[in-house]
Length: 494
Figure 1 (cartoon, rainbow, N blue to C red):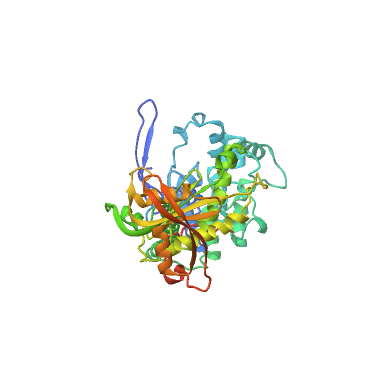
Figure 2 (figure 1 turned 60 degrees about the vertical axis):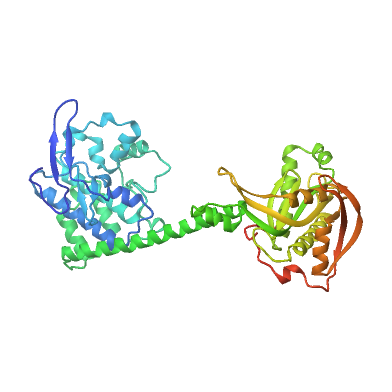
């Protein structure tokens, strides 16, 4: 074995026969076994590549049959290795006396026999008399694996390996049990199928030798051409490079798609400008916004509604309602800050400064939400009439990202508290606004408001408050004046 030197035979380097078990050493081939390559769907093999691998195997086996060793004895696709030049090398030859099949479990043992000739399955003692013919049978099985790429003994997936082996051992007749080669099973050239069938002959004497196989393949595959080994290697490397480029491009596209999905999810949790800074490792400092309008809403009688519903029904109901609200926000230059139970918090002018239009944007959004609520139906309580309270206030506000684990974009300041008071002191299906918001709307023009009263607001004292009752459709909407949606990640729910 040490004297065997051939381009298509893997070099035997040495052996150790010390107890408890002997060890042998062959050269390492970085591409793995032929079986690994054929089972990897990401590796594309065209006919030329398959022809080249098959011819390599023929060359290696022809050499083994002509050397002192005389045969292989355990030929299978897992014993054919691929080096870094994509050249096939036959390995694990000459080891029959060192291997103990009893060490394998039942399934693994029978799987190793799928490449074994039927006569050898029936009588292992004939190995020395027809070892070369048995190698030819094994070559035929590997040839089917190369060209069809459907595994060993394709077409018998409904049977266990043990059942296949038992049939091969016991059955003798005109119809042979062999891997399927019909046209419906795969598109393979007829001369290749003919070669497989010759190698699978039941009678060992009818099988061709590797010298005949080589001549057959040269005539029908290479068409008599003699390719220089350097040219063959260059062709293989070129095809491998092209295949690798396709794999890299495919993986890159998959990576871009996955990144887009993760970015989309991140932009739903944080403003895009903040998310981009966090991704680059920049620190986020709180910002003060001189003017912004805050929107608060809650569901009237939510406690009573929840008492009539299961926890799952409450979650589904809120998800349906706020998905509709999210779709409305996506049409305005506003940012959804958070939902806390049945409370819904939105702001305009933060994080994107939009001049003096934020009060009108929130007003438009509030009116749209009221309109949508009038037609909204609770799925499990279709007769319940849903109502919301809405409160708006305009003023100075501070915003920033809070926390490292599950970070949140939060609003701080008296403006947020006052907007909350506007909502809590409002009435069902009405929009309660502060004097500051009313003044901002009057400056924009096109909005209908009515004075409510001078009210005592907790934490603020006496305040003049107003109702927002509608808008003048003839006037320009703030969303027409300045619109830069920060809610591009929301999916509109019709």
